[in-house]
Every structure is written in C-alpha cells, then in structure tokens.
Length: 299
Image (cartoon, rainbow, N blue to C red; front, side, top):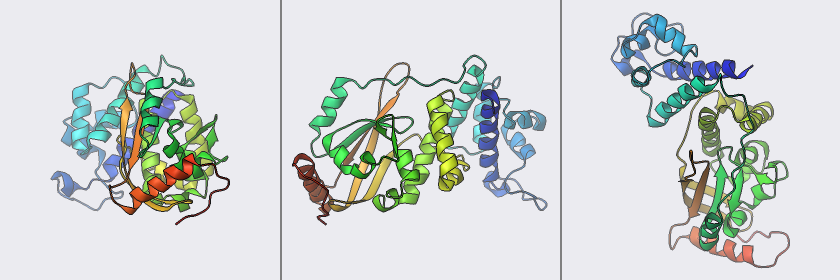
C-alpha cells in the first residue's frame, strides 16, 4: 500500500471506529429501526456535523486534505472525540495535506543535549529515561537502567543499540512477569505508537516497527485495530523486579522541546515517601552502584 492509500485507510479506520462506538441515544437521536451494524450511521453523523451525507462519506473514506478546520471541529464534536482524539484527527488532516510532497523517510535521530543527561544523573532516587516517539530509550540514569534491567538486557527487543518499550512489551515473554498490569501497559503502548503514527506518517523506522509488531504479535494487532490513541503518559506502574521484588511507582512524562516540535520525552519514576517501594528503590540504587555478578532476588 502506497503512502496516500495508507493515510486514507488510517482516516477511514479511525472515523469508522469512533462512529461505531456511539449509540443514537448518546447524541440525542432516536434509536429507529434495527441496525445492521453497531453505532451511528454516516448520515446521522453528517446531520450532527452540519454537512451533507455525501460529503461526510467522502471524508470518512479518507478525502480529508481540503477539509477546513471548522468542519473538522464539527465532525470531532459530532463524534464526541476527546481532546487527544481531536488532536489526532487534526494530525491526520495535516499529514494528508503534505503527503503528496513528502516521500516516506527514515527520521533522523536527534542527539540528547548534555544538560538533559546531567539532569537525569542528578536524580539519584528517581528512575529516569528519555525516549523518542518510537519508544526507543535514547538516554537514562543509573537507576532507570537498573529499574528496567530485564528490558535493557533483552536481546530480543534491542533496536540499533537502544532498548525499545514496544518490542519488549509485545515480543519478550519476560514483560508479562515484569509488568503486573501488562494488559493496561500494552494498550497504552499501542496507543502511544498510534498517536506517533499520526504525527509522523512519513517515518519509515516507525512503519518498520509497526509492521514488525503486527507480524509477530497477535496482541499488538488486536490493540492496533482499535485505533485508540494516547499523547500523555503518566500514572502508576506496578512492577515485579527480579532483584528487589514488587515496586509501585508513580511516573510522569515531560516533552523535551526542540524546534520544530518535541521529539523526545523524559519520564521520571518515583515512589511514595516512606513506602515499601521507596525502600525498594533505595535497595535497587545500592545494587546498581555496587560491583555484582548475576542478579539475586532480594524480596
């Protein structure tokens, strides 16, 4: 499938999936006769958005390049898109407008500033790392490497010398033991990649990663087909670490701004003060800095 066709397919699949999740009663419409497929009909979305059924059908089939911002807002409102989904729809429209001029390319890796690494290294009781949109780990501090030791040492998931969260999550069986909420993390991982695909439709390395995961992981294929997206990355992560046992950590991610847009994201993992997980992080920090051989389970 060439690039324009792939983009039209993404638009069609996304809008169709958002339409299918709505019921007439959700948007103040009568249920009417029995429906052959779930969700709203195209003509019902057209009425809600204030456009003709024929026009909306063309839009849903991927003809989005010439659509005005006002119409996109109306369609987003009709489909009850949340803020992240609206952003994704606008990213798709932006990509469609430039697709004829932009061939698929391999995105150039941007270096991490020295000061970013210094910041990571100064956070001795916080596990930190920097990743790109493809979820490659491009920088980390010592505790961050120790926290994610199973991923950092996984030959299955290393890409160009960098560990990759998506490959580890979906291709290494150890991930299901490491992440206690593997299903929730898997859904978030697929949604982050889906959002990146909307932002960077011409990134060949991203296309290759998605193709690899789709080929090798049925679980990824199922999640990818939902067309769920996620831009923000924060919450609580529960980990069963091979050295210190269970850790319940809060994490938050921050964009590292670079022109013309943020290309990297820094994530910091911390434990609640005074909690067993804080003690676990302190033990892990000591283990990471001490000379040792094979990991020995402490907890």
